Image (tube, rainbow, N blue to C red; front, side, top):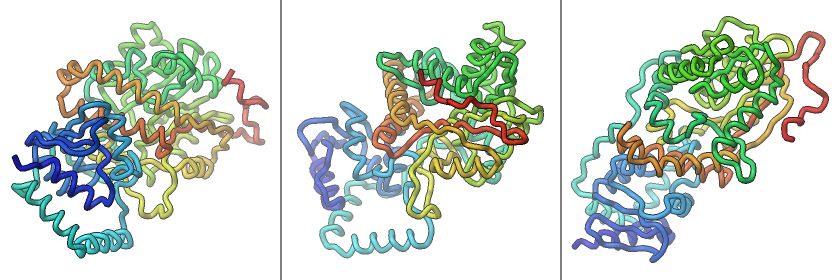
Length: 444
């Protein structure tokens, strides 16, 4: 026995300067750490090598995806305990700062660590535990190599395909019959299906949809918003997505519900839509894929597609602003395994870009706690259907989605992430917004 777990615990406490918050079991069967609570299991020393080669989220994620690092007990509790040490910035925020100032700070920190004799000894012991030393090959679920400039049309198609073309059956096991992949709108005692239906209805009511009005649903997913708007409000809906699998599924649903005269589903980039004007646009969970450098183009494109007094409902995840926005960098785990090229912006930045495009922002509603509840419901469904999810994709893919959704739920619960619905209008000549004097009738 090499007593790997006690050594790991002692080394971690030396390097972190704090007691280990969770119990650890190592590949040799030894254990160390708090006697109760979840257990972090190092099934192979290769997991330690991954963490040493890529400290932080990405190394841990690679070990998790490869099945070399697992959890016994409550995954949410374990993530919550380690968040203060490793994920204090939460999913979707920067893994570490970029730029020369941040690089100098990291170098200074590393040199200070190595100048301390106890830290040097700890690092040497970690290297001995992690032998042999070559860097392990990343697990196969990592995002494929990307070509072309960020957020070009071709690269966006590839990024969307990586995330969404996993298989409609897989998503069905996670999302449930609603097939809605965005924050639900909860009320006491609601089921996931209730909450997703209420979210779709909330969007329709905020947009003030009326029979015969044209709605463009940007990032329509599996067609749930388009179907609800047509069925319940009589809107004529064009839904667009870059996912071929989503479009096929949505078209099948449209045909089965007999709504082909009201709903058209296209595989199309929002930048290629040329058949405006529309009376209203819904963009639910799509703008996170646009990219900060392209957001003004996104806002201007949607503005141009609306007619006078046209309405936009933009439903989008947000992050808190950074003290130095120039140093912001996307989370390495999310970028590599979940949403390639995805970027989050502060709410204020989003509102500012919409206003610069000519929109008048009329209402903002924060739904942060609602997304935490939604993600916990998805995690519960994935855990209940894990065997089938693995059969449909792979064990690594199921582990990616489980870690991503559980960590994100905690990010929303602790305020490291937010999600907001922004209602904006394109005023008609003379300033008429077309909106009622009292907007908040939808919350009744």
